[in-house]
Image 1: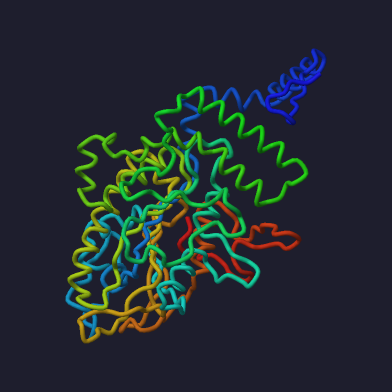
Image 2: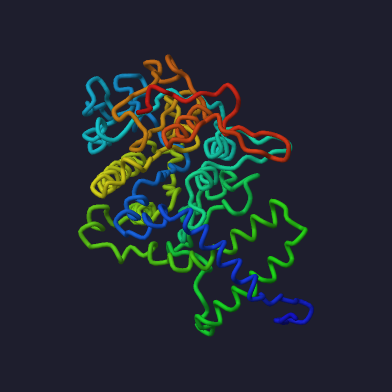
Length: 435
């Protein structure tokens, strides 16, 4: 006998014997996993497990920030600019005077990589390289950093997103093809709407909770039936991504900064970048593995010094506040905060008093999880034109990020019969900045 929900879609009824058998199997599985259930059933321990989960906040400096006005100043050089280099809390390490708050915290929070030579000064190509760690091949589209870390750090039963991207500026929004590549739609980013809300997940008012649940159950039933004999990476990936939407619908309050106490909001400041960083902290605190916050527009071909006076001052304040906030909540130890863009700026100054695209000798920073705080790796020449010591590329940065998070940079994914390493063969992390 069968029960028909819809014509042509028989649903077998369970016999008493099969029900008892299923119950016995369920009881055995529960007994086998009782230790884990016991831990998760205790709120304090469950919260501690969530706190110890690794996560990442990427502060993407869209357009390319100047290393000379941030982490690698060249005072006294012919084109060093008007800003002084100031001592930090790490003896012998100086950064721009536009970053006094980070200078105070360097020994407790941050490592600097000063010797990148990525050889790509194009916005699109540079962003693509620094989001993926390498160039795509003809038959392989590589996942971006967020997709990889969503897969590696995400929880299968999580009710929050694995990968959130915030980029509200129109300038440069399409530079760099972010996305999950061969990992599939399950690890694609959720991009916030202009009002910083989670898009397209609110239930229509005309549909009540019961209707919504029954529709979801029916969709799952039809999906499972359709997938029989058709299993492949694409259909499974889309099905898995869709099945998580109901959980995401309960996450919308995470994106509402009005939920934050006024003193916290005041500390960060009133700018959109500040508000996005508050949301980023709320997300990682709730267990989101990867959040990208983009701040545009650093492409200072004209009036470089005025542009960086505004943007670096904001970055210094918001970044230092974010690190303090994470630390006060016990999250900095398990959260890696990355600052980077598609490239740096030229040491030379053009006729518009700007600095142009420059990928030959520039800097990124890593703060928090897995990092030797206060470390400063690599050295550029006195005029800033070349790497003098410790030259690295995008691959080494990505390998270092993976190792800081406890992920082997030598790990392989399987694409059909072909193993795909996380970074290209022969690439190694910068051990000097790893804790």
